[in-house]
Image (cartoon, rainbow, N blue to C red; front, top):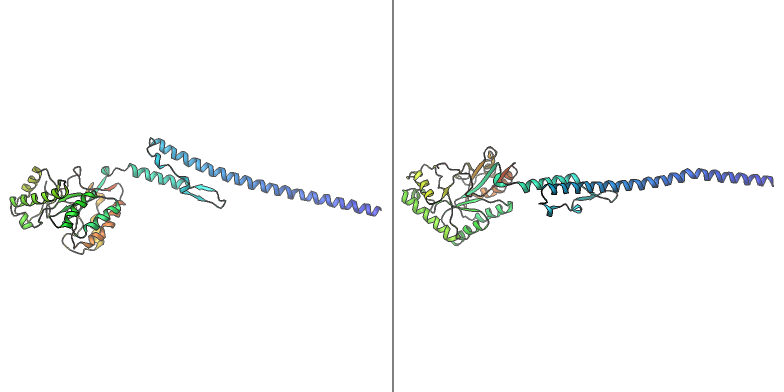
Length: 319
């Protein structure tokens, strides 16, 4: 019996020791669980803090702009990502940078750009005119078309299409035949009246701008060009020359790279750039170059592409 009693005592002590040894393990287990819960809660609180900070920043932007951008509040679900916890995060810095870019774009006034660029196309309409219009639409820019006199059905349609798509329709003589146009003052005036009447009757809008074949500084005219410019002034017409040439005038099939470089290399050196392109059936590379030209110009700082209007700074070889 004493032996049995001793064994039982030893067994009790053994159980107590086991129980005592289990206590730290159990406490450690609960501590781990508590830490995990705290980490999760911290994770969630940090996420909420990020969201609140982002929303506060956006609200401050809205307040500073006089609530002008109410419709452009951030939709958090559109810019968030999920981390390994499955918790939703806001990419705060990226979104704020995006908002800042949107703000700058909204504030940018093309008419006040430091560098204004005018894409002008002479000699059309042609089989490429529609394609040129589509490219301009693709980039959301407007241009100026100095057209000659054509009375076929497609050309008459294109005169109206140019205006309907928001571009400026100008005159480039009716015949574009130097020997006829510049024979004498009467010949010039008659040619002018013919193209003016054609465009007015076709589109219902009187054209306001004229580009002389060869420019106002051409050396082939038998008429004093000052008399021609004076005649246009008296008719209420403004003539525009160019100060940038794409290089596509005298040669067909000019390399695309050459057209792009010639059209864009010194735009940042002047406030107004009027670029001369040609819209004829032989100027396919001009059409190919056009998207690259537009993209390069649009990438330039404080630069805008505009159509010629009455407020455009005059570019005239002969005033």
